[in-house]
Length: 479
Image (tube, rainbow, N blue to C red; front, side):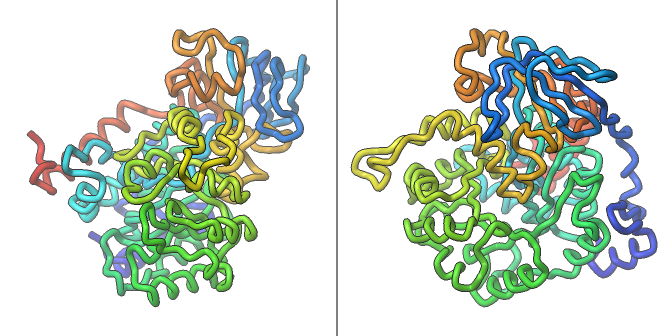
């Protein structure tokens, strides 16, 4: 395994700089995937359009014109010379979903858990065994599954970045995966609590890939994730946060899913840490005062609904959700890890809507329930805003980038269409996603992935999973 120093020597002469890809010897497979499909001109016609745009709202029948990756017009009976027509009759047209918290390096380990052997034991038994190629295979698997499910933007919360070569492998996957994303570089899993985060390679990646602010034609942005007090001593955590803030980097942290509360939002506000560039996830024990501090400073929350209920063993996720939105906190949705919840935004919206009701005898009593429109906003525009991309994606708005999905409404599990937003939340699944455009490129059409070699991606993910299970032994050993 390469050390940071050895990797720096190996790749310094070969790094292309800017948004280019470092081409060290072990990463020359960067060109293995076929070239990205071109951005076309498309007139998406006669769809039921959920714009999530506060002005346009719901359009029962309208067209969406896309040119060169940009939404050029939205409205009925548009004329567009030279644009390829996409018939959206009996389909819902809407913005692609945004997942604000996904540990993509472990996607291929989704089935490592078992009864009595949950997420944390499985992660602890395997996290040290992932090699750079495993990271590439896992992130590619995750990206393509997201695209298939209509999720066009993801926050890759990489909390096991073991070496520079592992980071390069993830970046290569992002270049080839063609989804919009933030890559949040983090620590090595199971790092000692008194060891500070090494920013040496974080600075290198930022310099070589993100010198203009983004990479890969604007699809990838950059940030860091920090361990917080649950995994680091207080002086070390404060040192890590100071280093990130000094660099002006967006920061993501895990709060606690169960008491005691290891994030004091009021204290963070005094320190100047809160704000739109800090994303907090799993903040189940938050108080009303914490929520108010987040709302005052426009600090967003990532709510990993299924994970909060599975791992929030001493908290009340329902109260946390209703408290945050009552305070005015920007709430987005996420999946956490595939061994806890599948990357299925339809299921996550549906579950969030079902649990987003007040319970008598709890602090949620008397608060208004979560509605269909609200969970769609959480899954799209709120997620984009949480990642600093609210002006880029998250809604169908003229001038934004064309991250668009088409959902069939004549399928047996969806028909008959009535209320458009209800249909998306209550009935649809990834199997109903007909077409997916990311930045104006079609990656899925007629229900089939068209921009990826799915068989190869699955084959390589299986090989990585088998190797890791064999190395881990015990309950994970292949039978």
